Image 1: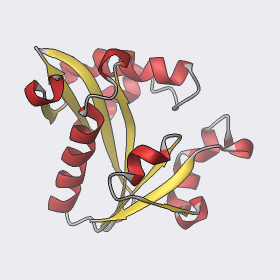
Image 2 (image 1 turned 90 degrees about the horizontal axis):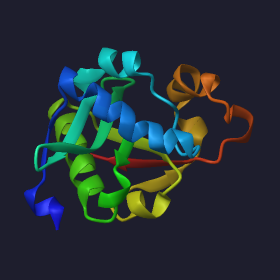
Image 3 (image 1 turned 180 degrees about the vertical axis):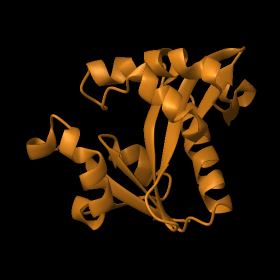
Length: 155
């Protein structure tokens, strides 16, 4: 199982193309927003990657909204590594960093609520996060027909 041999670390500029490749697969399926490479490079310090045998196989990012509220976003794992615990490792790393920063509440918008529920997240109305809606959702093609589920967890 790769998760035992997988290391999760802060992303580096050299990882931007791998992150772009991984997230593009999900964006192409309508499962997440497309992240242009220049956007990933701008936000590289907010990304984490999972590395297995010197290959980036997964990623996630954090976005800060207030000193106490943040989002985990862009969680993606290469198809061949799904179901092996890589996503959990990435979320745990993000939560660890957020806790160190003093964040008390973290949220996600997801199409996979079962995964986040198993990690202690609870469903909540999207309107609880007006900062998210104004920052990102207004540019989303699904704005008027959003099918993502908002979930939150206290840290």
